[in-house]
Every structure is written in structure tokens, then in C-alpha cells.
Image (cartoon, rainbow, N blue to C red; front, top):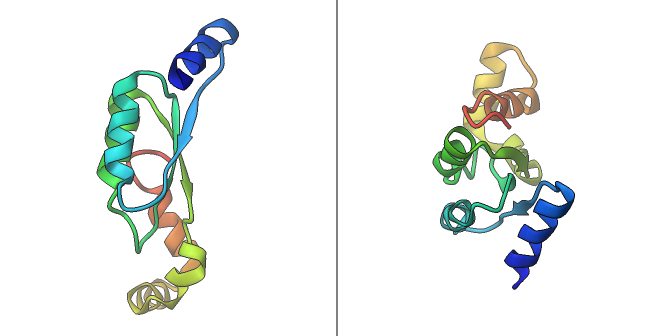
Length: 111
């Protein structure tokens, strides 16, 4: 009944409807959401340490026109403790936070 009401509001008021994801089942939940045909955007946890939802975000964006909003792009600061990121940032002579965020911005789902 909630999805039906959201669909009614979307049609009658021209609203865009989004959903927010968290946890290990983000990709599965996003597939279910895409299949409803209701949603226009998704907010998902995505960062260098947790990128498993990436292919699902790409499909939602490229095949279904979803806008993608990334949350926790810095993994609450944990990415700045990643030795590989720190080494790459040093080698490239850029701040590690900028490199971490640039890696997200470069994704084909166009966050």
C-alpha cells in the first residue's frame, strides 16, 4: 500500500521518488526497487572499502536512468587509514581524501 501511495503521489504531483540503502544487501534491495518502476534515485553506501553495490548502481543509472547519491564516501574517515590509498596519494602528490573522492566521482554511475 505504501508503494501504491507513492506511485499516486508521483503521478499526481510530479514528484521524484528515491530510496536509501545500507548494509550488505544493497545490490539485492536495489534490484527489487528498480523492478518496481517507481523510483528515480538511490542513495547508497559506496567507498573504496565498500564497493560491492557498484555494478548495481551502474545498471540502475545507465539502464534505468536513476540518479545516484553516494553516502559514506569516506567510510566515516576509515579510508584515510588505508595504506594503499595513502601510498597512491603520496605517489600522485594529492591529498588522500581528494583521491578517495575522485575515485568515486569517476565511477560510470555518475554520482
